[in-house]
Image 1 (cartoon, rainbow, N blue to C red):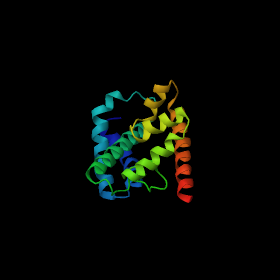
Image 2: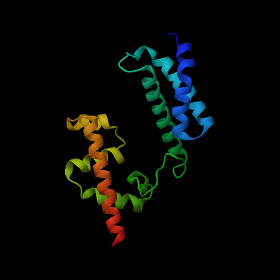
Image 3: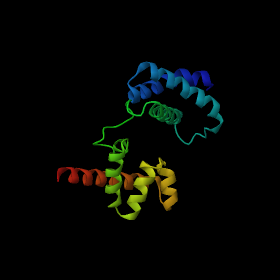
Image 4: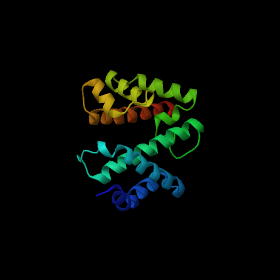
Length: 162
């Protein structure tokens, strides 16, 4: 299958995936084009370990994440990429007061959970590199982070309730 066929076959799927992420048809179109440009440049690296659609959606996800980071740098308090403070410690850290709340709550975690949480939240490390640092899997890092995040939010809520 040549790249033109790949584009025509997979374009609707990639566009729908991105539209679901960003809820903006124009941005989804732009990111879809970016995805296929990136894919064309990296087509030689596609080893066939997964379905082509999966590979393209991973590229699309990375394009979306890059766009969110770019927008966050330009306008830190707007955009869908910023979660509600009650559900995301990273969103609370937008203010110095919120950051102190999160860091105080994180300080109460056990050592491994605290490190994973801070590497992910403050260090913006991916789960694969965090797992590698601990000699564990990316899944371990993901679960550890999720549990730590829930404990941090629970601690913050408890202190707000007092």
